[in-house]
Length: 88
Image (cartoon, rainbow, N blue to C red; front, side, top):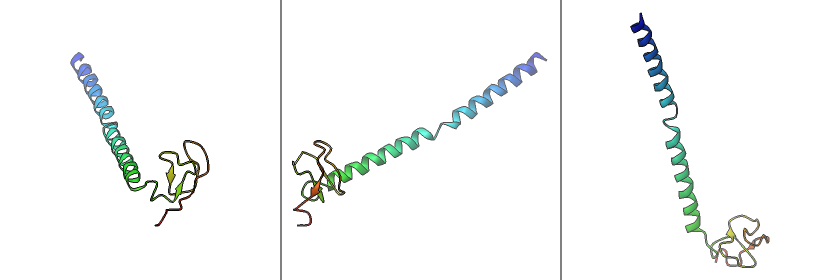
């Protein structure tokens, strides 16, 4: 009788261990893949976009403050203006 109880408890423990260990197996890899894709996308945008090719630039010419969309300069908070050299 003791052997049967021990076997049932051991089987139950093994089942729970298996279920919980498999429940989170793919989530780390998926998160890591999404972070890698975001970094790649940001890198491509940075490489392709500079002050000469951006549609909008900061009127104070703050370093790194250019964009494809209208908005504010992240450094001085002034409104970005259309780049006079855009498309040339």
